Length: 206
Length: 218
Image (cartoon, rainbow over all chains, first blue to last red; front, side, top):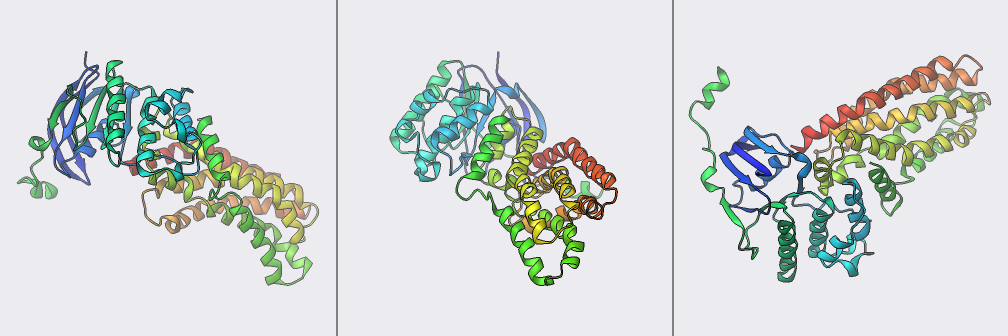
């Protein structure tokens, strides 16, 4: 029973169709890695799946209450501490336990520090720890390993593996090797939409 | 949603949160006007209701552009849109936080500033009541304007141009209630109309603002 199914999806960015005829299914414990050169539409696909923008065509079959998203920005408040930032997102999702997430991303020593005083990599780790406190099953992650060092990437890999082991699923757009052999690769290049189709010009005046 | 309210209040009270900014601005207006107009008690008393209401309006406007822009810039608004929070609830809570941080202090300090402007004794109760009933509408209308302009760089100026015309009915009825109260007339009608604007804003604007946010997140 797939948790997320995509049929014949077309997505657009800035009014231009970037990808079309995209289709895949994601079941429990599945990890899908989106690949492709810059600008191919990895972020656009993830934002569409997260419901942040409408699909141009096609179907997305999933329970939106099971999806969570992590983008380029972590949504952290500089004047709140690590625990306060995480506690807010936990409360928003109806939870109150944040300690497992804090220790999973090795933030225990930084618990009471303001987010403004964290390094870029530490902020990223806090942003990724947020995924754990949402308690949601499908993680959509856009470049999650940006500014992480090798040890933190390993930490993230362990967290992701734990999520998959509990029946979760994830779609990750990334350029690096996460070191997870179970990952399924999906190269988006073949789904690239034709730049400007013949006839589109006439349609505007029809 | 309570968590969002708590977070916004906490952010406002910490360094750089902007708490007291509107209040200080309101204070400055009420101090500067008597200096500019001169020490004529009768004249000041006549213009006091209008000055106080215009001052409150502008003070409210001052912190509006932060309502959604900060969360938009650091990605928190995207994450809230994906979270179980309805965007309508997000708007309502942010407007409430804005009112608690900006509107309510204005209401409480206004009688003191009324003294500076030699407001007639009969006007104080109406000043308190009109600001208390009117400022929630200012925060909600402002929230709608802030949601419309959230994706714009330097949207603060266009925000003022959008929001100020929508503040006009509140200003008219609010200042009128105080004026009538000060001269001992029947101030209940403008006060009730003011309350109607606020209640209408509570009922409609969170939905309108949430629709604007959705369009701007695309």
